[in-house]
Length: 396
Image 1 (tube, rainbow, N blue to C red):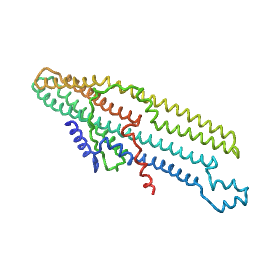
Image 2: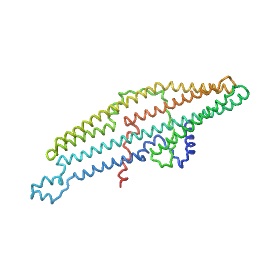
Image 3: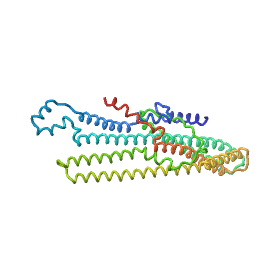
Image 4: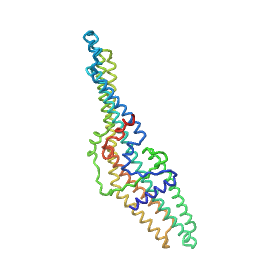
């Protein structure tokens, strides 16, 4: 809990020094719901989907019979006009007109799947960025703690050097380390500022508003079990909007082929039919390639997750041991024992590196879990994008 409070304080302190006029606290749980209604790219894509949906309604309106009594009367008077007037009375009797509606419907479904994929990818991107920012805050906090600790060491080193307890130049070496840590703090602060600016854009906030991210509770990863590829393969392939969209397009190719065949009896040509068949085969190949790509994505994710799980205990132990070593050297120095400044600096570097790896691995687990949820459309991804429900009002 203390670490969470420290991170929140650090976030507010950092933002107050960046110069933004307004801060807005946001949690990881809010990212998915916010991005669905605020994101600029999502809104643009959703409008395109809505327009495709509207085109279906227009096509259906033209499809339903519109009784025109004057034309019906003309049928008996001019039998040669009957065929030409069928479209006005009952277009669905002609395969071409009915298939045109079906084609637009499937294209809408394809657009909807594309939108869902983009929507899910942007949520995943925002959540991954969220984790990265929290990781960078953790590293920044860790470096600041080390920098303050070395500031104390510097005072001790100066005193002991004056008294002859340390060789000349020891205090200088400590100060060099402090300056290096200060450079890291400035660099990380700039990086976090850039990340927060991008997060603000992803969430659709005005440029004057900067998000303050609520820390997430890191789970006890030691209790996790390895994942099995076969447990998720079917769910991934069945849920993937990228694959479903291509399957819809293959269906469109069938509809277009039927339309061309119908026209063949009038003005169509065999060449037109071959072109459509070729497009369908290309779509099938693309669907197969997409399926294999999804399988590879899942396998890489599972393998990396299990590898991190195996390495986690070692990373945690390494972090603990490096902290013990640093504390012991620091205590020996304060007590006047014979410890070199270079040993202390090396202990500090080892601890920073070990802690950074440990922090990274913790957040990597969170990102891996979320990426798996995206692949199987679970949790934040197991819902209809909220923007679609409000597009009608937006366009009025």
